[in-house]
Length: 102
Image (cartoon, rainbow, N blue to C red; front, side, top):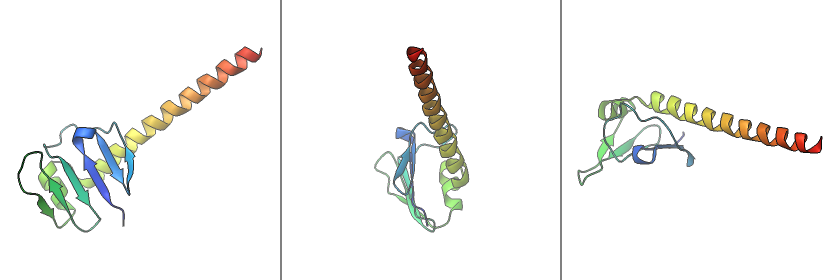
């Protein structure tokens, strides 16, 4: 199973230690991080409050206001934007190199 780490202050969502930054965290309640291994995990608060055990996936939405599937979709949106920006930069560089050769 995949391991998820969700950190709003960094705007980053990790799946199996692969980070995708610049994720949308609008509408998410305040928390420091979520650790979820597919069957259990915990929610870490920003302040000194004790961690909350997450025993089912529905707990993620209960405490954050957003279901895990939405965090995953937002991560994919950020990844798609990153890949599109990289492709556009590569195309621009290739066009510039081609025009220099002409």
